[in-house]
Length: 248
Image (cartoon, rainbow, N blue to C red):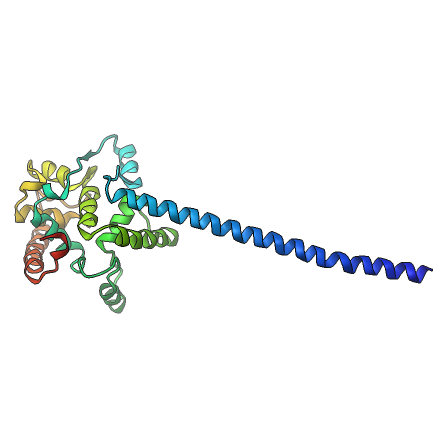
């Protein structure tokens, strides 16, 4: 009888094992489905957010808010592309992303060149910088770069090139607490974005990589030389059609 009882207990344990595996599999399946739903929701929200900014001026990004808290005030005034001198748009393309009209958000030619040269400088396109300024924070960690890549693809897919440049020019920092080309024109030259001369536009573009240490109104010799190079580049892309995507 004792032997028969032992067999019954063993049989009961064997029956319970499939039930445990089934519950575990069901739990993992639920977790997987929930994760997919969350990812799908996040993707749809990102698409809606990027799609909204195609038509609505972005209020500013995380970095702009950080600077406002640090300084106490910032200078900024949104202007549409029609109120920005075409030479300013061409100057920024020449300075920051000469192949802007040709790539889909990532300039693979420039990336390969940086890798081959072993350079520490970045190869961010205007679209990538727009993604960072409008939707993300400044930094170099892998999570931010991954999000930046995702937003870059969405921006390229949902916005025309002219809109990308328009948003970039209105969010870029040109001096400590000075954001957007209209505020920069008034701050440095007591002018408007619409009335910028080729020299002024080139100098504004020249300060973009280091707005806190470069001055467009009182430029160093380095900034003067950089601005002269940008003027040549702006004229070149106007002639060869690399500014065609922005109507200039």
